[in-house]
Amino acid sequence: MSLQTLLLVALQASVFLTVLTIGMGTSGADLRYVLGNPRRLIRSLLALNVLGPIVAVVVCQLFSLHPAVIVALVTLAIAPVSNMFPKAMLPLVGPGRAAAYAHGLFFASTVLSVILTPLAVEVINAIFGGREHVSPLAVAEVVVASVLLPLGIGVAIGTRWQAAKAWIPAIQKVSGLVLLVCAVVIVAAVWSLMGSLIRQGTLSAIAIIALIGLVAGHWLGGPDEDDRTVLAEATVSRHPGVAIAVASLTDQPLAPVGVLLAVLVSAIAVVPYTQWRKRLRGAGPARAGHAPSRAH
Image (cartoon, rainbow, N blue to C red; front, side, top):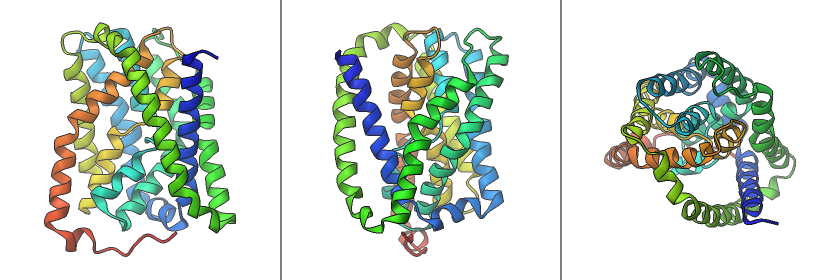
């Protein structure tokens, strides 16, 4: 087995385990918080599945980017919310209603992505004139195998065997360790290739997409400050595993490397917003922590 194949298997296992634990820990209250409020759900889908892809396409049209970077940015924009997102939100919003929103948003994004992501791919194919054509059916298969299947299994386990939830922290630690090792090896292996993708304006284009996504999510998050934080972060926290898998279906061999570049630059670009929201929450603990803890 080659190192590339071994890394791919390890990454898939890590993503599977992470999504599995999210499914195990997702409660009915999480889903009701998102699905039970049609306005909140519509605002969320507008930020994630409409404005996000539109911004990516427009920016790609305005900048002279490497084709692999264009594929990377577009595939990231149409990918569901990252499997690491719900856990990453806890330091920002605590364990109350906003945490339920993060879990419910990930769940809803994952389920709806089976339909919405291939649909977005078809629209983007039309916009780019078929230059980077990707089969919507192939994209749907990637989404189902990568996130929907482990999420469904996790929900079934969490519903039928409550005692299994005690294993969630251990499974997450194993998954996180595997992901960290794979990430270090992959970044070290492709670091030199990333330089070949960077043209004048490439880093700016990635940062602009991330920042506009933050603004859109924050604006559409509604009156609650924690909900704004969750939707803003969700808009830029896309599933890199799905994006890499979809990018691999194109005729751009460096597109997966472009996804990693976009993820790294976006993570840096959103740091000021993340720090601001942490300070805001710290300055108003009574406001941020008014909600009861999320039921499991």
